[in-house]
Length: 433
Image (cartoon, rainbow, N blue to C red; front, side, top):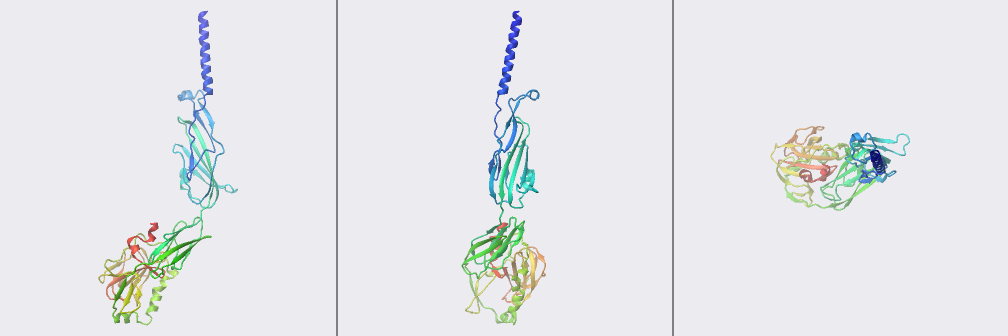
């Protein structure tokens, strides 16, 4: 009898113990974990919706299959971030690396016909670029597979924003010396028309440099007065004005004698000036612009030798009281020395000119030209596309010249600019390289 009673007590205690453990287990709160956070353009947001199971006990799998060892918890509901207006084509999305899957859906909420703009996984988002302005809503979804933290979890995050990409125009400088080149760039955003540019500094033109991106080179001629100048860019419905202060450069002075027979054979020849205007001067017109970038990398000095006349110098000839100006650099070198192209470009002129002798002009794009004068021989033809280093002629002393040398000149439109920044790599045109 006593044994039966004792056994009954043991059974009762076991029942109470198991029952108490079961009640404790059921009432045991779910463990809390940090809810994963997503950021778009560095703006963090909590989940808009989500749910997960958190393990109450680190029980073995065989037990987890037999008794409830997880508890479902709801994530915050309705949270979203309003980013306002964004002027970018690509947005940076950061998600926790621990997530097993990330997908997104981008919609235009006011488009009732085709609201979905894009969808896919994280790699698709990283490659995605917006192609039009407007209001957007982005939903990012994360999924976590079962591990020691979650049995499984899903979270969604919502961002609302407006894409407002406008053309952006930049000027390489607001202060330029006589002889400099000012580089102007235009990112047209979603505008489909090319920008245009105008300035009384000289003829300049935009050339394409990528998808909806353009570049122009504005010359500051050696004769340009020290003053403030405007450069106006028309970019779609937007006009942008760049203000540039022109700073005087220091130019050398030169005195020398030119033989009368050379003057009579060049400058005094009837029609010599007209010949120059019709052959060289006309090249400043827009129709001689190549509407693409042909040059590649840094320009080179065509030949090595003594610089006998510098760019922009004041030249007094045969005792004249009035100075002429020198538009390029003169490099004294032996007759017959090969002359290579300073950079890649298209030959737009290769012929004899009374004033300058055998002359080659190469267009490098956007109106940027290099000129090679007084050659003894021309080894290229108009229309040829030459690479940097290709031989285009031989050094000579033809035209208005006192001896073998190469007159090397750089022009944009009808404005001569200094070749030295192009040669030494300091020119503003290299700003995008």
